Image 1 (cartoon, rainbow, N blue to C red):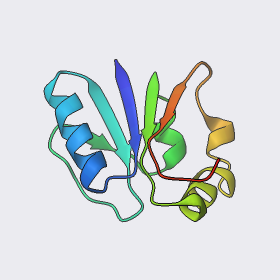
Image 2: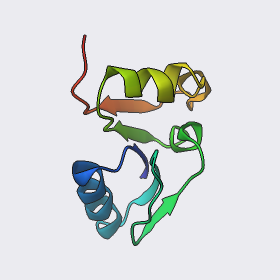
Image 3: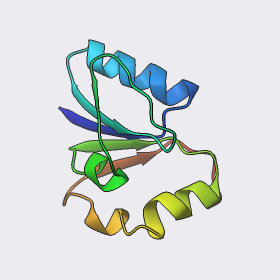
Length: 91
């Protein structure tokens, strides 16, 4: 399965490592960059949203707005993408 991850704090890094170790193709985008063994880093959040499943772990409402809405990344998501938001945000 092709998995995209957006946000690589402590939780996102651990999830990305575990998914890659389990044999999944994992691509990730992080606001502050960084690398994880076995994970392909992409340049934009829209690229991470081209997966079968995407996990989002951003810090707050403002981060969600700036990454997904203000950049238009969410509108560029792959059709039939399953997007799991694991961030602590408002309804």
